[in-house]
Length: 260
Length: 260
DNA sequence: CGAATCCTTGAACACCTTCAACAGGGGTGG
DNA sequence: CCACCCCTGTTGAAGGTGTTCAAGGATTCG
Image (tube, rainbow over all chains, first blue to last red; front, side, top):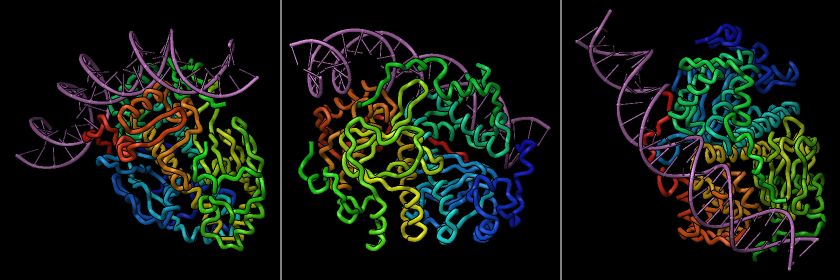
């Protein structure tokens, strides 16, 4: 389940691990913060016992108290729909934050569930803003991270708005690959912690289509797929599919769309 | 073009209009801020000459200096795609903010163009964060607004991810209606400042489909459509279509999608 | 008035979904 | 240990929704 280079990052022991010792520290809040300030931040951050697969971090409408950073493992966030199903809004990998969407309403608009054994850092929001009032660079960092989240969502919107099923799945794989790469994992050897159903739900299609696409990508020599293990054989090809759609659709020149 | 109750809000004269005098002041930053603090904020806000239809507020990759609040009119934001077209990422109505997605990269990831004659308030970001360091409630308000933006994007993601064309268009109309209502405009008499092409682009479909849907909605007695003038005749029906999809799809019970 | 653009409508086709059946693991109990 | 079952994932065929292509009507602006 865990490949070679995870050993230096994953630490399942619930020891008190300082941010400065964490392999992900560049990815969470502390970027650009002085060591003395980092210590202050360290003091307010709680470590929780790891969540087991299927356990909830928070339910929808739960009161908002903290934001969370994924330390290891992965989390999916989703909103229940009227018809009793769920719409997945995101997959969260190590170094990524959860709960930013709850600040304005003081309640979590989505639920968060562990896709595998997952450990997290909890950052009480009140204490964080108090600290940000004292440390201007922390305030800036907070705003930057919020902005990054907005930026990320916009790129996702661009993805989901248009695009064929093929392009969407390719784009998801590219995104996962890139995020793993940033975190020091292999960008070509992915272990998908989410089910095909989750992927389909997230991308707005049905399971069958996802399954067929994995098969097709494998036939075309883009991927090697073995259950949850995915090896990206032709990253550039995958990129091409993600951006323009290989088969057709590359020449949609007539698609204007301006008001000017 | 302008119906009755806009007169108290729209003020095309580029006079120095204080936030405290603005009909939208509850919708921009100043919520929950003391009068004395509001004055400080007032001092850093610039008013710009109104933009004419088709003029750009900023281009993509432009250096980020300010965030903007729409005072009157409307703005679309979009990103150019590789193939020379554009992907619209949002429509911005009076009282809404622009540029929050540029904070982390210090460059605007999207371009902003006026859909009609539009006046804006410009808030220099450096000065805003300086002020936020002095006024904690302003910092909190800033974070809340960023969070709101994230929340809004997530709801849009949920919309675009799944959903038939019918549901998407209905949802857009519901969203516009609700936003106009909040701003004191009529929620049933919409004047769409964007073209059909813009709508199609934003919702990830082609113009023809949008056109057909408007026709169908009219035939079904949900809307009365006259070019850019749209009257919502049956708001509850529109809501039903937006949420579940009237025709079919309401019974997608078998759509599970959990990993647990 | 004429040109350009935006919007609408129709018919054929493509992609994705729906429905259905089956294969392959992983767990439990006999 | 193997039979059995449940669940996830895969594959096939038919059908529907939205797209593509094509043409015509409406509106705006010079």
